[in-house]
Length: 295
Image 1 (cartoon, one colour):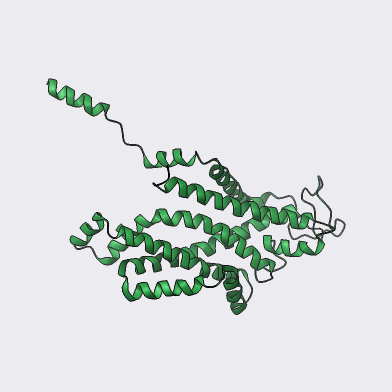
Image 2 (tube, rainbow, N blue to C red; image 1 turned 60 degrees about the vertical axis):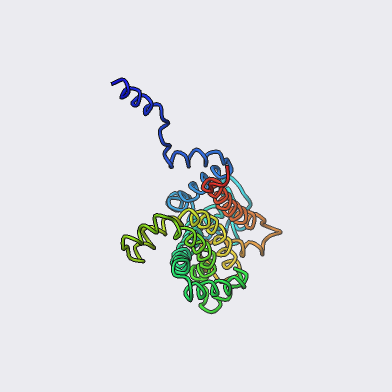
């Protein structure tokens, strides 16, 4: 009985295992810049969802009595060349800009994951084809490749999504391939193979979860890149229709009035800058939190 009580007491004194979610939250909250960026992104997402429902002005309604007015209590971010409220158009454009960026990254990520898993798992000719295709895409600057694709397909939001997704694929394919090569040598994968699991089950049930950590960081940072690329395409006239409230389109229209109404350029430009910066800082914070080599 004495020995049992000693064993029970020793077991009670052992430290309880920490929850991985609590440990992640503890480490992440130390990255102040990443936390602030996450709050900014959450607010931006709420604005994209609910903002158009509560804005005071119709973003497409022209008011020819208030052309090119500067910021004022009535129009806090001024008006454009048609008297439309810039703040209302930016709020409405948040949904379009984030949707295009998120949609393109999701499509590019899905294709990149599939190609990276197949290349890393099977190797050989599959690996050579995927990697050489990625090398070809990497040979072109992202924005030039996107412009070439949109020039072939024609302008429009859907074609912008396709163009941005195409140059997103190779980065994910390389990252997932590298992670797959490492994970597939793990003991639990060998055990799964030894008990007769099929290749598809091993690939998606055992290897893919081990690559998610690498994917999350790149996914977050790629959203910022996609926002910048889609805004650039809209700025050049390849993206959204000129009547739609898109950040890049607003920036393009405002450059003609830079001397008389600088707010038309400063407001959308500042919003693009802050949004891209927030996603990049969040990605850095996630990388520092998830990487076990960084203390």
